[in-house]
Length: 548
Image (cartoon, rainbow, N blue to C red; front, side, top):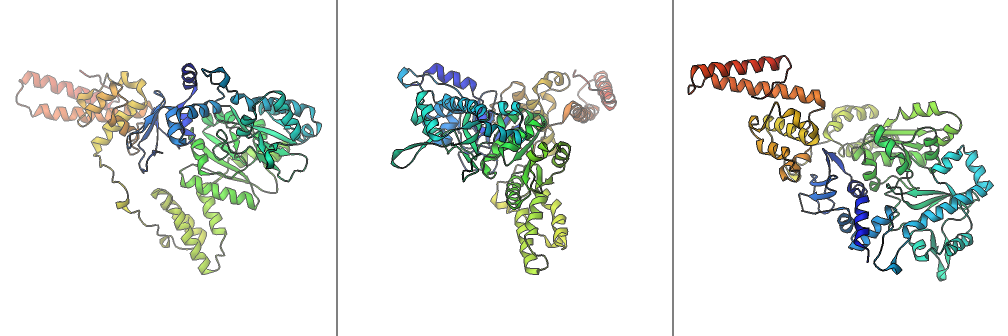
């Protein structure tokens, strides 16, 4: 049995945004994150992840819990299985009440990689290959590049180190063939360790240097290795991705190593597979622009087309950079063409334009029937985009096809198929935007309370009070945070301008009320009129006026 102290230590290491974000595309909503619930079918996001509480909650189906509960529900695992999966992907060693059950699984791949790295230093052929490709010794060390020897040598090493065979098989280091014979999965290959987002080694990629039929191979799928959810070197690129709000996605390990070497430290690569929907949660983190840096050959264009279609339909911003003439990013860097590479990466073809152009290029536009088919295919693609983008790209498609934009009729979505939103009034929108801004930027609350309180709000005073009391679990506030129609005010100046406009309207209303009021004395009425007029004049001069 896993000790409770060990479970608590693991929980302290886990970040629920990282864990859930591996499976679900999370979008920031103030201090929390939101997504369509993965546990029931819905169109409007009601699933909220709260990093400060390290918990999730769905306001639709009621699902809630922590990182461990999420993995249990999503992967259909029991409690110990979920803990062991999270521990393995976090490079965390669990402790058990029975010492004989103590597991070293999380260290097996690290031990193997250290050995691979030592073997690389001793292998002249492998080192010469890396140096010929332009890779520095510092990059070899930073990326943990190694060399896997023959199968018998690897099996002998595992036996000498007393590393459990079941763990080695489970983690894809070795396999079992016919008649139960064991074999190493990486034989005479340069190895590239693949890490989880937390930095733990979860598998390897291997490139042959001795003419094996498969140029590249990856670890087999396992409980900790899913190549459709991982990106090579993401753990090294993560900080730069968040800082720059950009990510370069390439097709190869060496491209990534060379890009980092040249200062493009926000580069990653898919693991010998096309970009898939399972990659999107990881790409969504930090909300970066995506730049696809693919080969310009037929296979590269086809991969870029599929990826661009997926990314544009999913609302990502960015574009495609194709490398023509048989060159790739690694070649350009080796040849000292870093400035040219930088220029290319700053002139990508936007995803939607690339998809439309590739779609149309597949047809002979001299043939009227082919042109009609191209039109229908483009209309089908437009329907996957937002109404605004549909309208923006209608003229673009028309110009490419040489037809009138009026022929491109996308049609309106079926209103009965979706839940109709609540129609807020203008005043509702302003007050809710103000409250949402306070929830997202609580540090400004104390300052603003000198100028406004709940009594000034006509429609949502109770929500305002709930926000001030920090009741983040209030269903009304949770619903407000995930409602995309309610925007926050931008910057301190934006908030100041909005507040001046709101207070001006409020004091003008109060002035009008008091001038028509007959239940107070003349002196009191005169005093209030002077007070309100003074406040209104000061607000006109751009000065915030304190309450009282």
